[in-house]
Image (cartoon, rainbow, N blue to C red; front, top):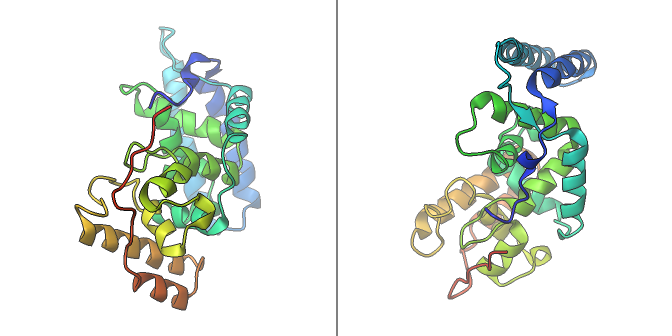
Length: 249
């Protein structure tokens, strides 16, 4: 994953400071959100637990509290990289949401595995859970749902040495990302969980099963109609022969 800029080179935001700021944001969201009382209560409780853990870390006698990139640095990193990314059509974005977190747009993004995965790309392998959670808070404090999702689909590992759906579209289907059909987008969206396990040639049956799961989730999320899902599920999985590998940057 050498292609990712190392955000940990810019340690500025203390975890305890972040937690205090997030408390005010969580309380405000708790009052104004329309997603339901239980979701608001859940968010408040999780935020409170996170804050308690963070402040406990801050209270240690040593000075080892984790530091994280600042909001400004994350914004700069995103904007510099996003200029190079292609525009991803909405159906493809919806396929990735359905595969990874169907309720992504209905909650604060730091509680999504999509945001957590982005954070994990930029932390050392031995980073603690607190630091991983904290970085997802900073990312969600900086970027919108749409920007986080855009970051995810343009940098997620999809097998064949490919990072991002645009390169994967070429490797698996010999197409640009804008040319992908619904069933092809659903297949690629299902790959982040286990690219090797869902290889379209060596594990064809599992690949089709995973693709069909994503299509079903897209229907449940009302991204596509029942007819669209049914037609795509009945379509054979056709990939380039032979598959190509992406060139690492």
